[in-house]
Picture (tube, rainbow, N blue to C red):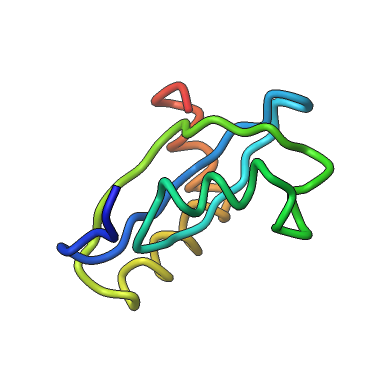
Length: 85
């Protein structure tokens, strides 16, 4: 998969090991998922493997950071839970 030409992808990963979420953003989700699953990301290497649970595309890095921050709030977590993610 090529880097997203439309902007950035805000993503939610679900750990198969502990079933917890990891939230982030990138311009290339396939590459980023491989990094998480191969242990190249310090914060997630003990919880791998992961599957993509939710993703949305935004047009700028500013929007991506804002959505990532929202998903990490209690309201954002409630939203993800309400849609089954």
